[in-house]
Image (tube, rainbow over all chains, first blue to last red; front, top):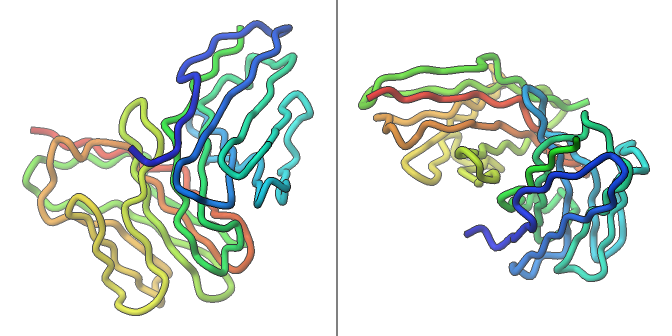
Length: 116
Length: 112
């Protein structure tokens, strides 16, 4: 167990659906991340939150909407997705987002998303 | 811009033999280097990292990595591979106040 829990582990949704991915970390960390992992592509950083404030948004389409109500929880709201959005979505956390502290990032098990 | 390359998509090794998974990086200053492993249907697990100090870093599950500044490499090694080491391995680099950059991953297959 890494201390980062993601639900659901698997999700199948239609292109007109609205769904959400949930992430919870039990490590007392201040920073949380969403990554997208697609086959044969590098991990893509989507969003970074530090102390509930978004500090990084890597040109992610608006059909992905993050929410960080507190430093332990992170959501990814999904709306009108495309089949090419099918991927493994990984949540992660670290002590701080400030990388000068060289913090290790700890990942959850991921949520497998299939858009049909 | 910082980047990391894993030149091999796939590495095959017989059980009991030494294994090496290659990683090279490109940064303009001092890098901080990481290795993660991803087992099937799981998230990424931290293996080891190099920040400063001894160039040989020891990590989880008997893995180690050697930082080579002149060759800008950070290859992952293990003296004796196990079938259970079969997984996807990611090298990552960090520099300054920028997000961690991951390589594309190398799939390691250890054959009994």
